[in-house]
View 1 (spheres, rainbow, N blue to C red):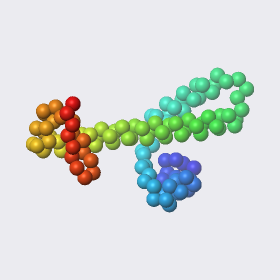
View 2 (cartoon, rainbow, N blue to C red):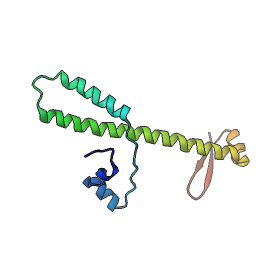
View 3 (cartoon, one colour):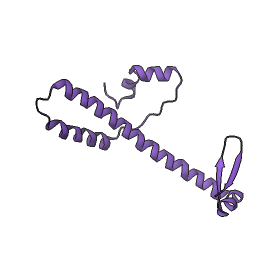
View 4 (spheres, helix red, strand yellow):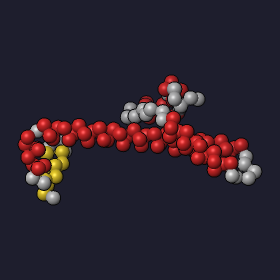
Length: 120
């Protein structure tokens, strides 16, 4: 199975189950630099283990792949969070009322149905 191929990923039981249950799934881009670095570190560690068995290498390789995917997801979500924060900043800067409140040193919290302000 090629994890970079979306059609292959649709065959994975957990992915199929999540999609069938309508659980939101975020697809992330394959980050070859992260995957290569994680795999490279595992290879360095494995080379120092005496009497290494193939099943151990397979288990470590699968685990390292999972860690690489998680790190790629973390990179994606950190970038997305920054984008959303920048969008929110632009919204606040464009709204003179909000901007005035922020300039007075108040913390603005936006809730789904209301806007509240708290003093620092």
